[in-house]
Amino acid sequence: MRKYLAELHKKPDHHKKQFALLASGTITLFIFGVWSLATFGINEGIVAKDNNISEASKVAGGEVGPFQSFRSSVASSLEAIKSNFGQLKDGFKTMDFKTEYQEMKNGALNIYGQ
Image (cartoon, rainbow, N blue to C red; front, top):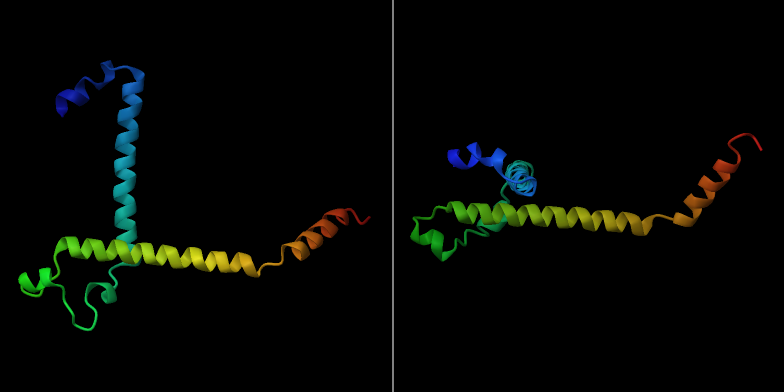
């Protein structure tokens, strides 16, 4: 890897841009993952519901494995995002755009007291 980074300045511009895009995308994805885990956390209802633990966790001594934890946290994050979009959609349905437009139009025409 050190050799690749040492010789990167000799590569063509399109290769440098591809490397920069890959590096920035990886860092952004990592930051988003940490943020989503910290913001939404693990939903206990998804991990174990009514003390019904999956077969894989029974084999592991009743513990939740790292992949199960990650899967449940991603699922809870997506569920939270889905509910937020649903609330936003409902908010747009309740807005009266015609009335708001008329008020804005009348206010814009009366801006100079005319």
